Length: 365
Image (spheres, rainbow, N blue to C red):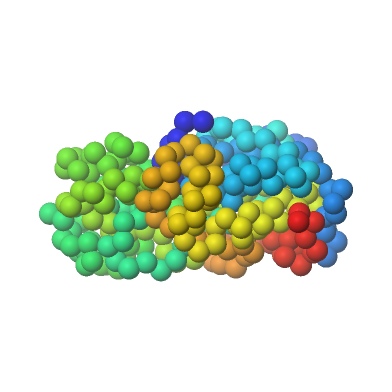
């Protein structure tokens, strides 16, 4: 698979809005009008005989998908009797396939389109979160929004008020999680996303080059390009993911929701590889670096120099509802949704699988 910038799943939020109107028709027989398997976590414990295939849509092997990628790369899913089929497909195309059961799940970032599917009664649920963002010191080179010193000043105390009226590039045209991050950062200086000029999205190297040559005053720099950005003394990081839930998600459709034991066993494998390979500063572990480089299709030096990601082996869903509420509120204000009054974000989230993975006896060794 060709590598594209990390967290690029957020970049399809706007396109997903167009597709969401077709999802009701796509939903049959997986649509929300029929009864899904809703057994509680105590009744969905897997056994050694729980086996099956899970087809997952993924735009590219991104660093934030590391637990899944390592589960495949190390053969742990196969050992557990789970055949993972990764379909390289943009999130804008994978969501309708999940809705109608041609894919079991998508590895993506929570977006407006997922709320629109909820409104349409389609059974697509957030079942597992990925990375858990940690508090980082100002100026730390991480994926997110970057600017230049001649615009905002120093990396340790950038003045975001200088971005008022400035040209800013977001990977989604201001929608979705990246738009929310920009809006939250600007709110700290009494501004909002409406106070900057959103230009045509620049992604990957184009964003880095556009920022460096002055075409824009700020741009989203995706992993692993923050490593390159940090080499330019004129560039400074100004806004990134807030501590906690980032919105990176495994979104499951009825084809997987109706096989809850398999979904739980799948989650147990994620937990196993996270404990083994992603504990602490995994960039110092030669075996993990080798495996991640192979899985993400990058050089080992990229893994060693990229920002450290943190993954909770329990994959707790704590904080996911709060995150979804904030994203929905932002999307409503931006006119990204097909409805005017907020839905209950809890209906988009299914915590049974991570809870069962922790409480049921492990059957993955």
